[in-house]
Length: 257
Image 1 (cartoon, helix red, strand yellow):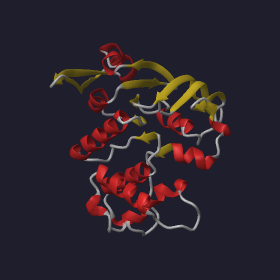
Image 2 (cartoon, one colour):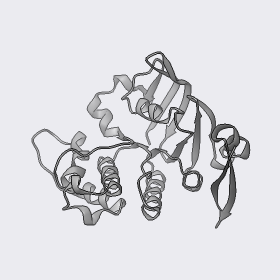
Image 3 (cartoon, helix red, strand yellow):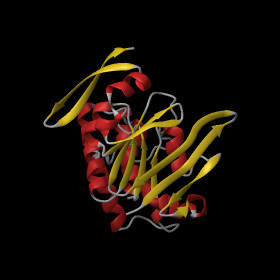
Image 4 (tube, one colour):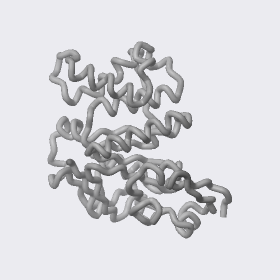
């Protein structure tokens, strides 16, 4: 199983420090929720771990090898990245768009083979988008586009998947469906990190949470340890109502502080 490691990572955008001295291990078999208020540095951290944002200090490694020394094509095969605001610019079918997620595994000027077709079908099924296969991608609703773009990331079958707010535009049914699939992938040995604002989904599905605040790790560990009342008050500035259903926790933001 693969492992992506950040050691002493700091990032400045211009003169502004965005991340400061981040240590983080994302190991196979784990679903990690990256949480924190707006502007905490979550998207920058995800982009940095994907190798898309250079570090100012510190380093990243994939299975013990410096990320900067890995061929970009090989890196794209191992690490899948789903940006927060994915855009679809081409009038292509959903099936063809999802197939582009297979490109890191393909030789140039070759079409789909049976492995590609199976991966595309499995990815569409995972996000409940089978019926969208023949549709033109640019004609989809916002929520449909979000699911299709997630399917494209899944079609590449990366060992590590970094997803920035993948359920933000989805209805409750599809939010649960996607999170259940992430949990299943992690149980099968993949390393998954997702940015989430829904604390109930984070607590229910994630094995570990990393709480960012002003570019630093305020807490990391099991959901029940990270989401205590003190941190909800100091980091999120809220009071939450908490409970459990079938032994699983839920949080309802109730009052601003």
